[in-house]
Length: 305
Figure 1 (spheres, rainbow, N blue to C red):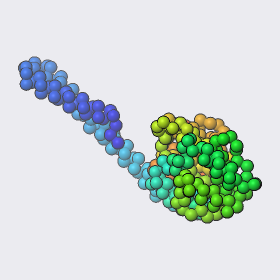
Figure 2 (figure 1 turned 60 degrees about the horizontal axis):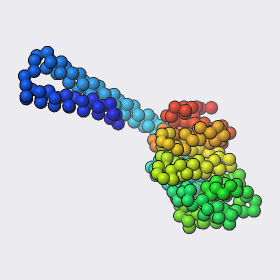
Figure 3 (figure 1 turned 90 degrees about the horizontal axis):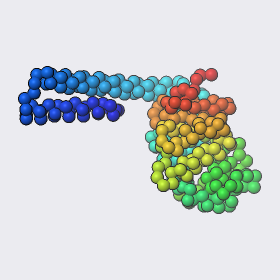
Figure 4 (figure 1 turned 45 degrees about the vertical axis):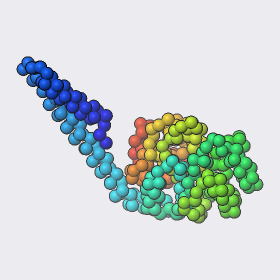
């Protein structure tokens, strides 16, 4: 990507050239002045070319790193999640291409796909909290005890974890009732049919919400993750760590969450998608890690044990 400095140098060179033309057209320049201005333009052109070369080199290196991640994924992931049933959940803001990249990587690991659900913006909308509270009150099985703090996403997240994860005691019928109710409210879509109860979960998010309700929406995504993190092994994969309300940044800023949820902050490309799958066995074993390109990330990918 051509950066701001490159554009600034280019624009400066253009305006200097225009200035020289205007001056030449209206008055006679003395020799030293013209020589200095010409040298300045030449220098700026050289800087421009150097910056372009640097940008192209960085882009090439980045592409090579992503190609390498794609090439090594089958061997690096082979058998790492044998006998695991992995559920993939995504927020509506998540890029479908990122979700697909992660599920493609997951296939190399030997894990069974336990299903795939997408939660719509309606689910995370703070204005729909009462609907979720009512749904939880109606559908919670006798042996499940979700939080009762009048927080719809918190209660629904806990109920979903109970009916979707293997550690929960709810039945398949309980699970079906909850998912069908959320579908009727247009809060979830079942992209891949739910199968075995999950032993681990990947949650794919997008960039932070923006707008009037952004604070509440971003908080609700973190709350949702927290409920699953309390119930079983979870890895959260996001395309970036930038932006106010960023989910990964929020998790890493909270010591409790950082110890129960693993994160990947560059899941927009193969390198981060590979790291997402590599982080799951580690989280299943009881250790949370934080990977990607952000300043607070431990490393790009989990280190081999």
